[in-house]
Image (cartoon, rainbow, N blue to C red; front, side, top):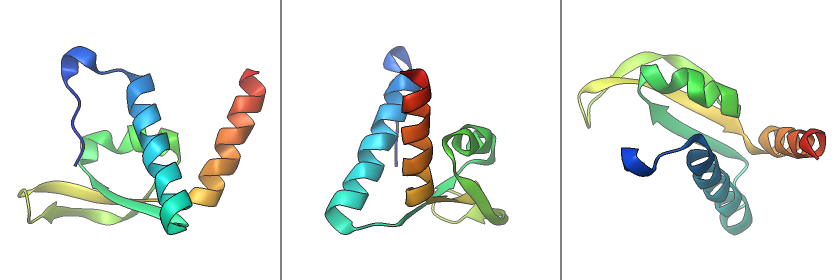
Length: 89
């Protein structure tokens, strides 16, 4: 679960939190993939990060709300991030 106070929310903050979480998973658990459930209204944001939808929308029983499973290959994400950093430099 992730929540950010709207008064302090920013795209950079969310990107940095995700980068830290993904890096932590790779470094400490040798994770190769990230999978998460998101509300359908947030799918476009996570696609911009590199996640891909897996399957179709379902109702998440924990919160009784619609959800879509999203997947990210961490090797692809890392290569894309490095490329973006080089372009920005």
